Length: 364
Image (tube, rainbow, N blue to C red; front, side, top):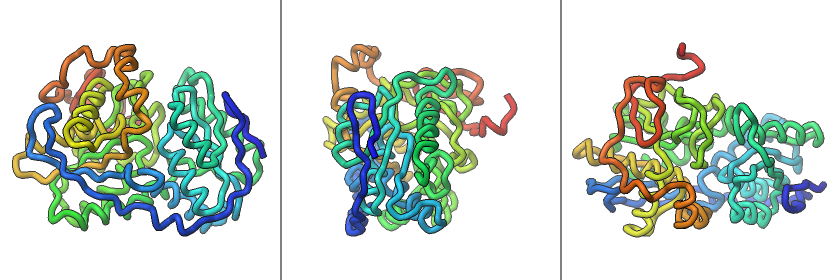
């Protein structure tokens, strides 16, 4: 079977299962981050998921495929088809090799060339949609093409990361690892996109520490918490649709972060402690440093979803940043702008709200 991508042909043929690969999943280290971001803070803990084979979402990818196999929804050797902005695609490429399934991914024209090459190198078929949908942006366009592929591939399985509860369940091991690494935890900072790890990690940790304060971190231009959907430069967090996996009731507050703030934070991490990553990493690190600074004595932890490698041509590229007006505003503010309700003001930079609502259930 041949899958035609925008630029070249990728192949998604039979895959021999390599279950021994599953031993490479998880058990990532926790790093103590004390570099000023941009101001001094007492430090916070970061779970370095970029050091796991397949990255952060390999945990979810394996859980979703295993769950589908157990329910009979995914036959042995059947293809797996999914929409991705990159991170889940790498996780599914890992899970497909480990469990013996060809993987066909639908990305978009903004998917970084390095990630396209990596996905193909790992054996995934790749299609790229060329235009965002008028409503729902790139995500809606990808899902529309995905549905066409499902019609053309009888027996193919769509994990549907946005709404699949196995996505959430896949992060139970991460919660256990964080809990076992710390004597106590006061604040957990989670990036929010499909809702997987932000729904799967806090629950088990709250059972251990019932007063745990959970902060959700979203991208400006994301509709998850009731802000208007706008074109987004940042990838890996935020959404133009409403994933059912997002558990709005878990969060005590939400922060929206913009690309300039994420870039500044990522670069400070890279220069100051050699531990850095992409858009989500910059966003959660900024908020985790603020939480540690404003809650004296609190133990703060977050998750760095990936490393810096796929962002060499974006976050860490001066020309790219200048083209997008990043780097001209100076360092991030000392604190976020406070708003009373997610619909009170449109967030255009770092913004905090202590009223968290599900926009599908809350009246306008």
